[in-house]
Length: 120
Image (cartoon, rainbow, N blue to C red):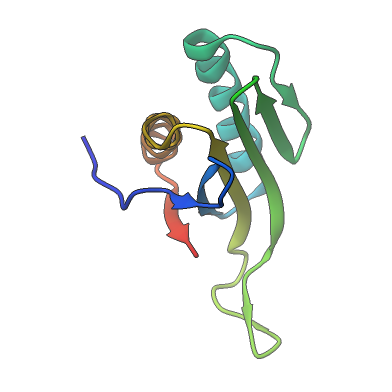
């Protein structure tokens, strides 16, 4: 099991874990989002909304949003040709639940041989 820092407290009892996923082709993101939709629905229920470039899921006390962001660039030049980024966030009223949901996203992403990292 991986260990992450406690989720950031946004006040009003809301915690957030922000992350980004790095991938090479749009199909990799589509496959990952499809797998995450199945896993989230199976584990926590609800009706995730899946499009070709994003996944949105929420319940009364938690929310997950992952969406295509952009090609990674530094100074106007692509860092790695073709490397793309999706930004994600998990927001919950329970810090433990944020960690649990993020761990599911992390494990699924790593199983697809994609890179995932926490962001500030």
